[in-house]
Length: 399
Image 1: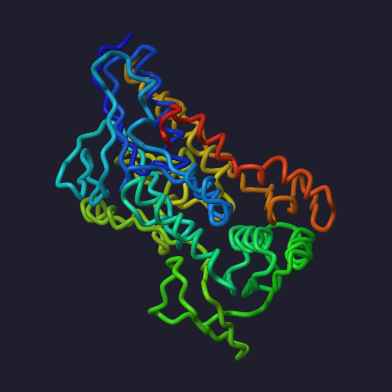
Image 2: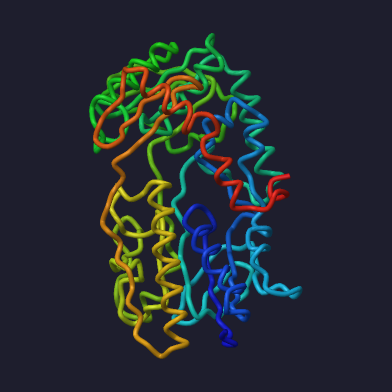
């Protein structure tokens, strides 16, 4: 047993941050009673955004997507006096041994994990600081979708397909239009068969699918879930009139908090798109700071590694390397760390409403066939994995 005080800080508490924080916090009940894990997030909750498409059409399901962060590490407390801590704040600066928060607080760390993710538009991201406000905002979206006759979804990746499919399945009398700029739906690193299957099954539900069309989006338009009759124009010249609009065209990384550290070290630590450079061990790409790790969407791994499944795998790798370093510190030995295997996502399951879906697994595409429907409805469409997320929290976390 080690009596050493160890402070681990994890910033950004979604798939990657949750996985790292829980694994490392468990050490507090397994030989490191003075290990402290501080988790930091701008919101008081984590939002299971994978389930957002279903939350749009199912009000009670939408409520289940929010989990209180102050409960995440309670099971790992080694004594009656809490060792672990949740802080609701924005990260403003990373320094060599400290971080600075929007609350004005400065925290020292022995190990730091940056898992701040990437931002996307509502409902993929809920811009609300409290759990109650987040739920209320998603509930208003549910009511607004009910009230709308014409729905426009811009972007035909997995999320756009799922949103269009859920709305068309729940409300067969609404006119749902899905517009995508590429020649086929879904990420191009997957087989064309699932793209063709997605078009086929969306059209079965009555969705109008428009490919090879790019919508001109005015700078002042808000994709906030409000009923706002709007006409947008595609590059083809066609006008698209809708009551409510969804934008599902990608994410944006915000990593401005690295600027001070870059200035101090005199080197760039970020790619042009804002992602943070990492070594194969997922440590920050500088030999000066081996105790900083970066996991999930905010790191510089390729796009094929930016899926929830891969974020979970990265969390396991970072946690394992952190634990190795912590154990080696007690033995004065040089840690032997694991490397990311370079793998990218080669499986995808996309629900199209409650009973249809497309699937690629083991290099085989199940597009138009009923195999995709059966597997996806049982594996993902039943609850979009929210029950799996719930197991990471105590029962009262989303009461």
